[in-house]
Amino acid sequence: MSNAEYLTVKEALTAVLAGVSVLPAEQVPLLNALGRVLAEDVTAQDSLPPFANSSMDGYALVAADLAGATKENPAALQVVGDVAAGAVLDVMVEPGTAVRIMTGAPMPPGADAVVPVEDTNEAWRDQERSLPTQIQVIRSVKQGDYIRHPGEDIEAGQTILQKGHILRPQEVGVLASLGVSQISVNRRPRVAILATGDELLEVDQPLQPGKIRNSNGYTQAAQILALGAEPVQLGIAGDTETAVRQKLQAGLDANVDLFISSAGVSVGAYDVVKAVLEQEGNVGFWRVRMRPGKPLAYGTYHGVPYLGLPGNPVSAMVSFERFARAAIRKMAGHTQLERPTIQVTVQDEIDSDGRESYIRAIVSPTAEGFVASLTGDQGSHILTSLVKANALLILPEGRKKVEPGSQLKAWMLDWPETVLL
Ligand code: AMP
Ligand code: MG
Image 1 (cartoon, helix red, strand yellow):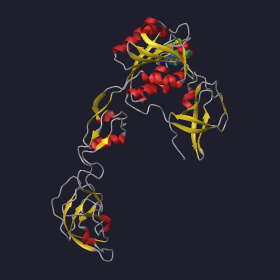
Image 2 (image 1 turned 135 degrees about the vertical axis):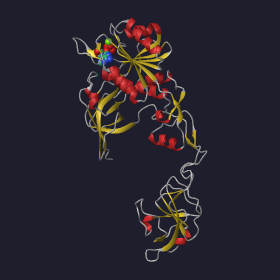
Image 3 (image 1 turned 180 degrees about the vertical axis):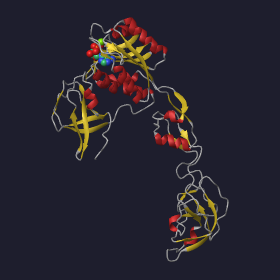
Image 4 (image 1 turned 180 degrees about the horizontal axis):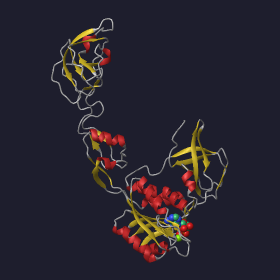
């Protein structure tokens, strides 16, 4: 790769994604699979519900016995048994009889419907109440009423979830109901984070003249965690080649799947990351037509994919969002790699320089749709502009001015608590 190629955002993203592969599958306890991607189809071993059961507290009976039953003219039935959830009652429900039944209890043989307890003269709720010998039912029911049938939800043998499906709490619940306690998902990407610069201090150190604390390392670790991946903190390397080499070696020793560094990849006199990567890696240095976040390094370091982000905190975070997020999602087995966009109406005037721009904004719902206002100073060192933002507005390449009232696409970083639409 030649030095300082100029690329569009799309070209850079395509190249970054081409350099990472989907990680292999691993078997994990069900709950550890939350948010991860299924690596194989799941076939149901059981039907759900597994047996016919009552959907109400009431009486299991023969529907034909209740033909024409009303409040004025109730049907009388002999109560011949009682079945609670978790129990099995092997008493035959003959015409003229009924079995008291609780929600979730299996239907006794012979019964073809349930009548809710509210529709009898025995609208009891307390456990102590003894079983009546007879009940009066004040309505009719059809065959099958208030019965949950076996296999109504899931049939045994059915493919219930396909490879590639993302496991949310509801999928975890379905798998639990089918007795799946271990599940095959793509491995979590292990991502090394390296902060570089002689000016950097650890978060717990007091400020000193000329120094700032390493915020990028924390932002990036948090971004990695938020993606369900595993950050491996390599800490801070000062601006010497030896320091950078040593830290990167620690990442190799930790068997990471991806390196992400911040700073040291532009054209400053102390950009030693660049020097190390040129000697020992196969890394290209790009100028991406993107704002914020022009410099980007990409390639491999001793065979491991390497992404060098700019040092300015806003540029680093936005570049991560744009490139690292998609790469990490690909490694984790996702197929939807990029954030979905929504259409918003911009309230402020926006000026840019023609590079594809990611503008920090607050998007709010209104009766007319989503509206966006900017979070103020868009300098790439103004971290609070990201703190205030819940979205990034995307200004396409070539667009230098946006008038108030224009439509733009937005990436939601998070959603407002209330959506009025
Ligand atoms: P550089 O790419 O090394 O020229 O850095 C660009 C700017 O980002 C400088 O102002 C750095 O001090 C700042 N910077 C670099 N790394 C970090 C970091 N880890 N945390 C916060 N700011 C940083
Ligand atoms: Mg630097």
